[in-house]
Each structure stands twice: as structure tokens, then as C-alpha cells.
Amino acid sequence: MKRLVDGVHAWVHRAPFGIEVASGLTQRALTLPPDLLGEIIPLAHGLPDDEPAGEAYRRLREAGLADADLPAVDRTVVEHLRRLGAGYAWQLAGHKDAPRLVEVVRAVNAQRKITFDQFGQTTVLPETAVSRALELRRRLGKKARVLLIGDDDMQSPLLTAMGQRVSVLEIDPELVRFLRRTCADAGADVDARCLDVRVPFPADWAGAFDAVLTDPMTFEPCLVAFLARAANALRPGGLLLCAVHTAGGALWRQVLPRLPFRELDVMGALHAYHDEGFTESWYHSDLHVLRRTRGAAPFSPDQDIPFPELILGAHGGPWHGILWAASSPWRRPRFDVLADRFRSWPALARLEVLEELRDEDDRWSRLTLVTRGGGHAVLAYDTRRGLLCATLFPYTTERANLLRSHLAPVFTGVSEGTYRCEAPPLRVPDLAPSRASR
Image 1 (cartoon, rainbow, N blue to C red):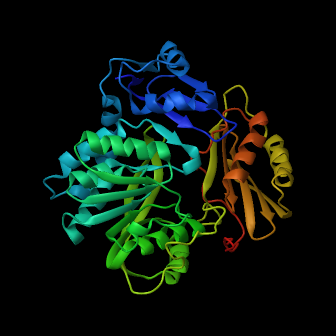
Image 2 (image 1 turned 60 degrees about the horizontal axis):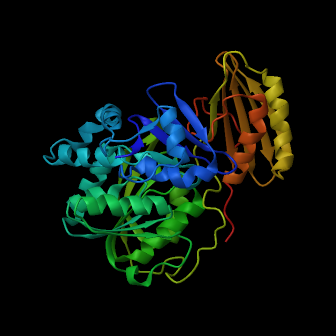
């Protein structure tokens, strides 16, 4: 098979940024222009050796990042996932088929070596995927009709292998193609459709499912949209298994009363994830189990959900990192230089700053800009290590990308959104979360 070599992963940034292809084992990395995306996607998923090679393959092979005559499964990724998941194997104790099922998920993960920043894709560890699939089977048995709203966790090949009847609603067209191919290769059938949750729901899916499994980002409009479609999909009495950020309890309790569900159980911090490139992630989420009650969803299946942004507002936790970066040893700007640059960003983002707060301790320097409408932005800088973190409320992808590009000229190594933050809980005013208008 022609693909990215073992240990290599592609990360597709939003325009105008390029496509980063890098090895987690060596220092080899290459950034390719966005116009080569159509060639990189099949290489990241693997394609037959007799397929013609293009410019992307030529460049990647010269850099030692792609090759031909390789097996479909990246064994380096499989082994790395085994190490990452070792601390979560206790969740599967007592399930004789768990080791086999975990291997199924590891193998699928190791064939999809690409992440799209625009879709907010963060994948659970294989042990987590199996744990919640076993919980679903415990409650419903086999041959249940299950809808996955979003499947960057690649749960569908696992559930089909466990005898469930699976459908997928997924916004990423390349992931839909990958899931169809992977399930077909295993002799399984999956009804995977490329749809945005905000457009009308398929009429043949309305009220047709025994269970829905979903892992939305814990922001108010995102939760409302995903749970509304879950309510559209479920038969009365059907089950919803929903992942919620461990710090998002307050927002969850605010959103849930609007929806026709009764909560049955919460499995705290059940979900663990890996970041792009199969690296360790700090992120965890709870698994909420709910039953569909009688009553109307906030949006009917044939309605659009009129949210222009799904990632908007705050999830109720103390912070949400949008940017994490380490400077090069020879270029560590003074905090005052970064602060001046940070102060000029709100005007570009059309935000009005109401108050500025600055505080320092023995390691971190912080600047907080309080903005009109209950928002704020925080810049934190570890001058000793040259480590920069930033957070932003209300979060939007446009503002986040603008902030990254605005800081890049004075700080080398700015990351295109790793969604992790090593700064301590940031000292910000007690501000009410912003709400999406409807």
C-alpha cells in the first residue's frame, strides 16, 4: 500500500495555513500547500500501490515521510496507542472479548493518519471506545439500531464488529468515505451519510433508532444542536449516550431542561483522548446516559438549526486553551512585546476592551482583556521556558485563527490550535458565559 510511513501524521489547518505532515519519531516534517490536499488525503488513509503518484507523494517520499509497498496498518501507531491506553485498561476488566475489540479500534486508528482542524476532531483512546460500546451493549444487547452523530472516534467499525446495526451522521466527507471503506473491508455494512447537524434531518431516520452515541464539543449551541438531532432520531424510550467535558457540568445542567431526556446515569471521566499525531491529551469527558422521553425536540427533523457557530461561548470550566506554543531557544520575546501585540488584537477582531488586568507570579506573566458582552481573552507566558498559552471566551474559530496569526510575527512556533494548556487556572473575572442567539 502507498501511504504515509509508520509514525507519520497529517494535520490539515484552516486556510490560509498549509498541511503539516510530521513524524512523531524523528525531527522530519514538511508543510505542503492547501492545493495538494486532494492528494494527501488518500495517502493518509492508504491507497493501492498501482494508483498513480502525484506531486504530494513525490515531495513526501523525498522527505522520508511516504513510501509504497507498506502494510495497511501502521504498527508504530498501534504500539503507541497501546502505551497511551495502558492506564485505562482497568475499565475493561471482566470482559473476555475486550482485548480483541481494542485491537480492532487500534487498527482502524492506525489507518487514518489525518486530522482536520476545522472539524474540531479529537479521537478517544481505543480503550475508551470499547468501554462505551460495552456499556451500550450491556443496556441494549446486540442488534440494536444505533446512530452515531459524528464519528471521528471511529466507533462505527467497532459497533458493527459487535453486531450492532450502525448509521453515521458525519460532517467530514473524507471520514465518511474512510468509514464506509473500512467497514466494507471487514464485511460489515454501515449507513454513513455526510451531513451537517444544522440542516434538516433525514426523514427515514426520524424516530428510527434504539440508541444514539455522540461526543459533541461542550459549548451551548453545539450541545443543543447535537442533542436536538438525537431527540429527532430516537424512538420513545431510546437511549442517548453523550460525552460532556468534565468541567462542563454547569452548562450541561443549563442545556438539558430544554430537551426531552431524562438522565439515568453519569460515568465520570470515562473518556480519555489522544491529540493529533497520536500524542497524549489532557482532555477527559464524562459519559451521560439518558432516556428519550415523550415531548417535542427544540427543532423538528425538517427544520434547520439556525446557529451560525457551534463552537461559541464557555463550557463553565476555568479555562479553555486555544493556543499553546514553545518558542525557539534563540528567540524568546519579552512579555511586554507580546502584551503590546495582544492589546492590538481586539480591534482587528472587532471587540471592545472594557478592562485590562495584569498579574504575575514566580513563573507566569498574564494579561487579561475583559471585553464587552461578558467575554475575555487571556495571554499567559512562562518566560523561563518560553512557553505561551492563550485562552479566549467566547470562542470562535475566526477569532482564534486571527489571534494565532497576529501573534505569529513576534513568537516563533505558534501552534495552529492544539487545545491543551499548561498554564495554571487563569485568574479571570467571574463572567457569565455568552449564549448563542437563536
